Length: 116
Figure 1 (cartoon, helix red, strand yellow):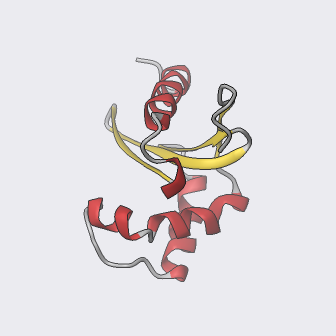
Figure 2 (figure 1 turned 90 degrees about the vertical axis):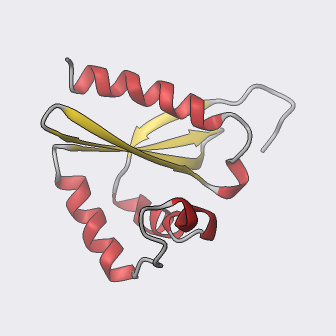
Figure 3 (figure 1 turned 180 degrees about the vertical axis):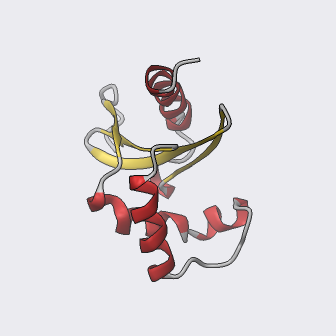
């Protein structure tokens, strides 16, 4: 990360090229400790979950890029007009305020796709 100039942010929808990256992030020990389940996620289980997630219109899975480098993910799962939030940042991007950037940008997207 280059701290000499302002970071450039991009929030985009996840696609099939993100599956391995999200699998690795999900199994980061710091992420596992904060998760509902501390169990390591198996590769085939994650691949199945990821494919289903991309197809589900009630799930919004977004990737934050900082200076064109994938830095984190944020996911909203909408059920009965309530969206459950899940997010994480790659280890090297933690502690720099990127989660607030990701959240504020993602909320704008949620409001435009799921108004009300």
